[in-house]
Image 1 (cartoon, rainbow, N blue to C red):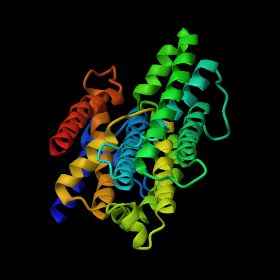
Image 2: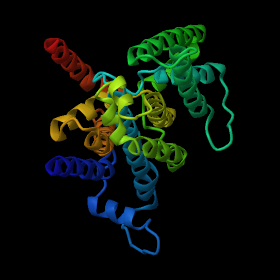
Image 3: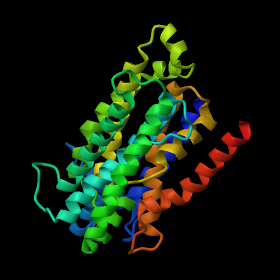
Length: 338
């Protein structure tokens, strides 16, 4: 397990360093590091950078790397948590309708042309966050009915139904407004191009709450792996535990989606790669996925913004190109075992 942690931490350090040192504008690495050091409190450093170059480092690259770190960490953590509580290795953070809800919320704002602000948060981000949370709430209510949720399959099927309905409504609004179609698709494909310290500050509190909620339940997620009835006989409040973990993971997912758009497959790729390094216990998989997810998305974003610079590839395209074959390989492996 120690070697797994060492490998993932090394990957994180390498991706963070590359993220701030490499970009379409070539800057000397030493001056870039001095520029970052100059922003530390109580430290006076001569950076050797012009004001414009320092702005590139501090106002463009640094917040983009930090936001990529947060988004990747939250999507990976949510993926590991969903796979644990649903005992389904193909579960991802958008399983319960979070992506469809966020997509519909963002689409409604974009097609309406609303450009105002809702206090400290932008209308698209607020609508995406609210849409994701409402969609998961609807999924849970639909699966529960008047009684407790009888199986994870019921919950997953409810998520599929809610996703289909919300996607249909989203498609209807997209077709009604051809002029905003490009904007909607740009958001759906995901991007960190608009990252700023403001968006980092908006996401951070929700990320902390979601992370704490999941990390406090690592042991009981492992207990759920033995089955609901067996976990109940061990004294575990199964439904309450599952609801708490799902809400925490969904909160983190909604926060990530609201600032980055829909970036798929991160929650599948990273937790499964981590399991190859440290085994299947969620007490190791989920914390390591938090670190590994950040490293993965920062690296993916670096490729997205430099491969065809000065243009950018939507980061959701990069993760889908990696995640699609990865998902099919997992599916084939699961089918071969049954």
